Length: 478
Ligand SMILES: Cc1cc2nc3c(=O)[nH]c(=O)nc-3n(C[C@H](O)[C@H](O)[C@H](O)COP(=O)(O)OP(=O)(O)OC[C@H]3O[C@@H](n4cnc5c(N)ncnc54)[C@H](O)[C@@H]3O)c2cc1C
Image 1 (spheres, rainbow, N blue to C red):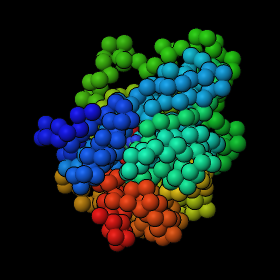
Image 2: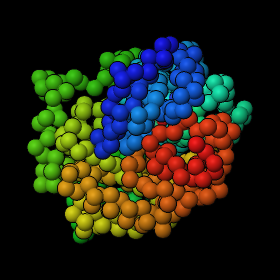
Image 3: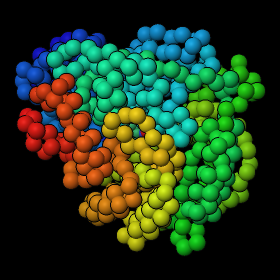
């Protein structure tokens, strides 16, 4: 690869997905593993950082690097091996969740864990160790991976599995691009016997009720997710809707397992192209508009309570892909997402306080999503045996400082509740919180491993610099 064309023409301004940060970097898109090695070697010789980037769907600075080399993995996107009998798939790491489900569904297999958008690459999904609406049942995506290839800073390829290079396996998954480049992934897919899910919508009159519904439904649910109207207050604080979805076996598998039966429609009402829908949303993405929309959705949820229906896997899983580029409706300053992970014992009072503090600060999230989680075996895990509340805040030039101040206040509350943060969503966390979040021993274990596989510290994103930069330099790192 012509890595030596290190000239201004490679300089691209790259935005965080939430448009809350941007940085210009020299972008390289190798299509081979040797090309990946060339970029690493070039960085070593020119004293540059390498910022690993997938599809750029992390909300904050997780795959940004100011004036650094951006190693974009998206052209390493070939499916290498597929066994329709066992559901084991071997892919280059730039394969996206969209490619994966479209490739396998016709044979009756679906990715075991997906995010709310199908855009992420497997590399990015593993870099953050993503979870889905079934996290309480099947864990994170890393728990379904049997092998990964990782190119470390000296160009060596480590083939890691839960038993071979096990420490590296459990650290590179969830290691936010700080230990090496994942280039190949072997993943066990999930058997499905129909392209449909049976979906049961349940109205929750407040946050207490939301917790009760989860407690009742968890034992029999394949997927469970709650939406919350963050504007509701008083007795209705935390009202919303839970969706329980379950696999079915009966619904015309040969038809429903076709990609065409899954795909999200290109037009709304058959005529309006989805691509321009965000423009219609834009006038409503403000406090008044979103209060009305949240109220209308809560009212509709009450009316639809218990109306069980079928949905395609893609339709249920990728709701956030229905309106492409919906983030543009938030305006030029973008948005942040604050996802609070809290152990079951303290989640209820913690989430109530979070919702109240947002309202008191006059910074009400326009979207709030509630999920249940379980622990996982990865080193830098964000998992809790408990719940998460994900909150989308619109940013404006006038409120940015107040949003950061609120996030800092919520960080303190979260830590006092035994809570955790998620780097895929984070844009605000400061370095001084990290030991309380992960524990000093875990942070030191991670940095010690980094010193072995990346002694000169070339794999550093802006997120790494923001949170671990000082600790790394404190250990003598570059
Ligand atoms: C609308 C929306 C909904 C979402 N829903 C969910 C959800 O339900 N659950 C969830 O968990 N997340 C969710 N996310 C977050 C998203 O799944 C993660 O941020 C994911 O990491 C994005 O993958 P990506 O390919 O875009 O990677 P990027 O965002 O580009 O990178 C993610 C991380 O992986 C690292 N990385 C990239 N390539 C490599 C590589 N080759 N080797 C090692 N590390 C690498 C990067 O340095 C970075 O730290 C959502 C995001 C959006 C925008």
